[in-house]
Length: 109
Image (cartoon, rainbow, N blue to C red; front, top):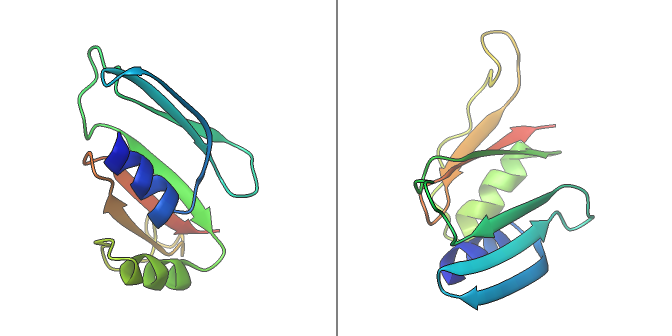
């Protein structure tokens, strides 16, 4: 959890709204965008879930600037590509993995 929490806060810029820990196997951290809105919750209480099986999508007003910023923070990012939603969609995007191997996409809003 410490690595995942640091990644989403320090690298992606999300804000912690709740951090509740019973022990290392029962820990929940809720995060939201800096301006609020949707909340995601990270947990160590996995039961039948496997690490690296989740995919998140975030929108950004400037995908090139987001790519440069994350690269500058030491995040291993893939190259910016075109057509996220298929040929001709024109939506620029790139992706990366979080510390648990989950896929994170950033797409031009």
